[in-house]
Amino acid sequence: MTKPSSLAAALEQALAAAAGEDGRSVAPVSFTLDYGAGGDSSEITLSARVDRATRSLIFVHGEAVFADGRRAASASGVFRVRET
Image 1 (tube, rainbow, N blue to C red):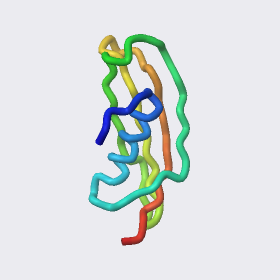
Image 2: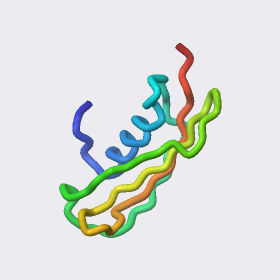
Image 3: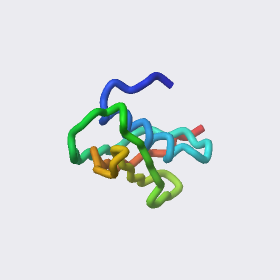
Image 4: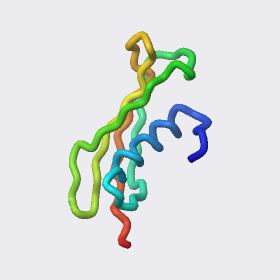
């Protein structure tokens, strides 16, 4: 995977990775991003978790947090499970 060029791209990749962590292939359906505090993006930690999953859709939430605890952004997304 290549390094994302923006905070939005980084969060979308983190959400997709969480949605597909069980090995299923997923495709984005919806992505919502809320920006928080500004700062140096090299100090950001990303986290993502699955909130709910059905047979065809996976709902995920993630955050980007600075080392000092300030939230840089939060995101939510819906991913469709691709047929294999």
